[in-house]
Amino acid sequence: MSSQELADGNSTDAGDAASGSDTSSAPETPCPVVDSLEQIGSRWRLVVLHELLNGESRFNELKRETDANARTLSRVLDDLQETGFVDRRLEEDSPVATYYSLTAKGESLAPVFEEIDEWAHEWLTECNA
Image (cartoon, rainbow, N blue to C red; front, side, top):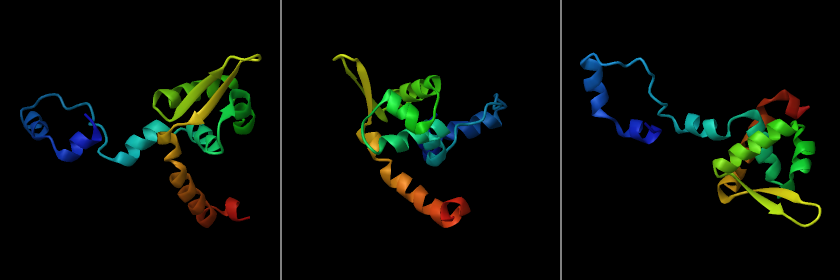
């Protein structure tokens, strides 16, 4: 069940609980913030998304800039591509190169990162030093 379905209400849930049916599994969260963080919330996903805000990058450039190991970076890029945040472009000239860039969905996160940056500068002493 999506968070939208939960927000709209589902009258059958109350009837099921009253009739004694199994309610041991917790419902999905009704909160869009939590749903969003499930897609972008891992440390490495955020680091890669933030780095790609600077523009298209090759795999090795991302690896160097993020300090992620190759396996982690590959997995994160695959996840971000699958969820529609990142595009992958293969250039088959010699040498073969793979480029990654943000999709419109990924670029739409720019204001979110700006807000987080502003918050960090206000509230985190490491950023104010």
